[in-house]
Image (cartoon, rainbow, N blue to C red; front, side, top):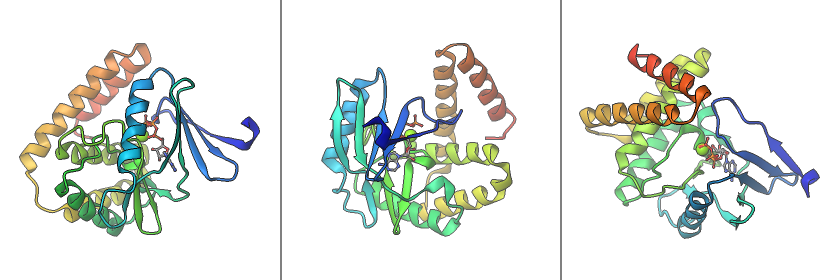
Amino acid sequence: MKSSLKKIKRSLFGGTNSYYITADKNYFIKVCKGKEEWMEKEFNYLKRYWNKLEVDNFQLIEPIYFSKNKQFIVSRYIDGKKLVDILDPKVYYEFGKKLRIFHEKGFSHSHLEVHDVIYKNETFFFADVPFFNERDHIHDLVSMKLTLNLYKLKRPWYYYKYELCSKGFFLGYGVLNKHKLKKEYEISIKKRVRLYKQRGFIFKFRANIFNLIYKIGLI
Ligand SMILES: Nc1ncnc2c1ncn2[C@@H]1O[C@H](COP(=O)(O)OP(=O)(O)OP(=O)(O)O)[C@@H](O)[C@H]1O
Ligand SMILES: [Mg+2]
């Protein structure tokens, strides 16, 4: 079985779990040690909502199998592009527009990072949903803004493009309370810094860098 799996490399700023794609490119496997409860919750949300969002061209990834014992989730692999790798403001505009409808239907992704959206055949697929519907809509906007700001720094050669994509996204989303967004953004940064600090030496370093780039206005 192992030989028919392709391991995906983790990046320094990526998730802390392991990921595989089956050789036939049909399935995606996320192995997540020590987080059985989150995984079970995620799998149940996927089962309940994956094709029931009722927003055109919006879907969750399709759940296939969950092993609580071995701590992995299998989903159908979407051979598309991560939203973060698409540098087209028009696609972000479309995504923002649809996200508004999704929110108006009462849904929220609740952990929405720009690499967790996979785009294929004009459809947006959401991955990583352990908190689906658990947080206020504003949280999705905050995490989109924050992850796009972080990618501007990680890929500075695309800085300007990400700026345009972010603008496109918010334009598509439409009217919003900018004061509330700013306040929630600040809360989210502070929370992340606190969480990093609780996770040991390397993360403490990351927390300080993160705090610094926020304070000097880079994110
Ligand atoms: N079924 C799938 N098909 C294609 N790509 C997927 C699929 N599921 C997840 N991915 C991609 O793999 C990445 C990692 O998956 P996921 O976010 O669920 O793991 P995670 O460990 O929670 O990551 P993180 O800690 O970075 O949030 C996602 O950001 C997404 O781009
Ligand atoms: Mg993720």
